[in-house]
Amino acid sequence: MDHLAPSVAEHVSASAEAIDAILKVIREGERFLVCSHSRPDGDAVGSVLAMGMLLEQLGKRADLVTADRVPAVYRTLPWADRLRTALRVHGPYDAAILLECDSAERTRLRGLEEFSIVNIDHHASGRLWGRVNWIDREAASVGQLVHWLVKAAGGTVTHEMATCLYTTLLTDTGGFLFGTLRASTFALAQELVEAGANPAKIAQDTYFTAPASKLMLLGTALTNLHREGRLSWVWVTQKDMIRTCAAEEDCEGIVNYALSVAGVEVAVFLRELPEGRIRLSLRSKGRVNVAAIAEGLGGGGHENAAGCTLDGPLDRALAQILGQLRPQVASLTVAPGSGPGPI
Image (cartoon, rainbow, N blue to C red; front, side, top):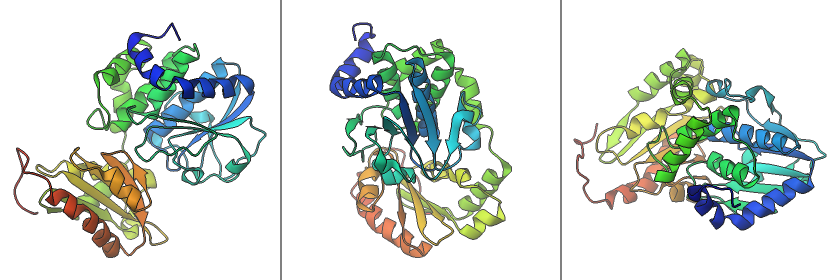
């Protein structure tokens, strides 16, 4: 690894054993399955695509699979047309490389139990459940880990790969607003831009290509905005989803509008699913660890961005999550710029 830049080498050295083990699996194999969690986000899509590119550079065959379709905003990414949708996977594969999944169940793919698992994750809820595990909670995205792997393997960061990896950084930090942000995060962004990523185009493709259905759903959610001191929440019902012709991907980012209220520290978005369960997205400005709360409810994620699914009805799920969050926000000291009372 003598060819690594100092900033990269510092991070890679901390995970050198895991990286060596992953590269050994890749060198000894020929055909690999690469997948991530269901309902893939920008980090999932971008890192899967970049991993596929790396495997091809190394002369390997890679099948890229997700249980749910790629959201429209990521379908312009290089290689996006190679990511196929399936509910069951069939080998033979020398290994399955799973990116940001704390369990096989998170993929919603059947058949994974047949294969040796390489588990690469950066979530606070990441677990050592694969045959080979690399969990680095300090990474801003799983794409950042894929980048280190490319460097360690002696691969080339092409402009196509740089585009995918920059997308993982941009989206998993909420536009460089939260998450693990360090000088090295922006150094990586610079390196990816120098390798060919176009930051303006990627941001426009990600944030300025929303369908009308998403905006209509957002409008509905905002009419349900409630604030209680430093805590805010919004929700939509299944009837709202049908009325606005919204897709699941249209729910992404709605929680951030609730978090943007001045003085709010924690926000929740609740979405009623067709079967009646309630999916929650939790966001924090950094003073409350929402990953710990989500884990206690069967979910997981990052300290500032996490999620879980609860039994319905909606008012019951709301009471349950507020019961967890109220003591957390009540213990916070008053922050400068706190806004007015409840909405």
